[in-house]
Length: 136
Image 1: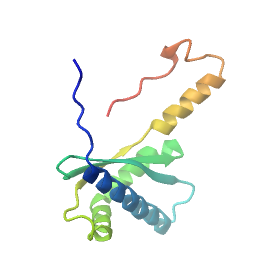
Image 2: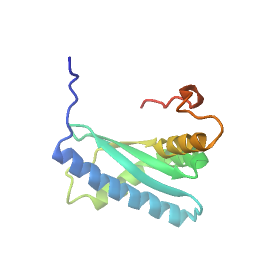
Image 3: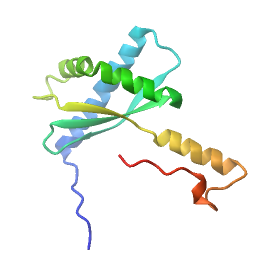
Image 4: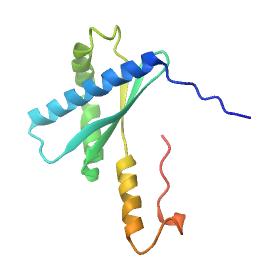
């Protein structure tokens, strides 16, 4: 029996794209103004619910060990980011969705696989060598 997976509508995709660009701009500007150097933050994906009221924003942070700290700082100024993004998107969105932020660990996961493949122990032969990826 096939599992029904709802498709993302064109409107959801459009809003996600607008939010992805504008949230990235706001966060990068805030990092520059704060004088933070050596940390790269990018918005890798945005998922918007079908009623357009909630958006999940996935952040990729380099270096990886700074991810938790950056996520805490972003969550601390969440309302300010929402306000700045709402100002940028006022001509495209009637209502700004509630935004929640998450760390996208896919690059770190890929890096671990790459290191393991180059190492002595091959995860292809022994899949237990890699830690399981967390479901979100």
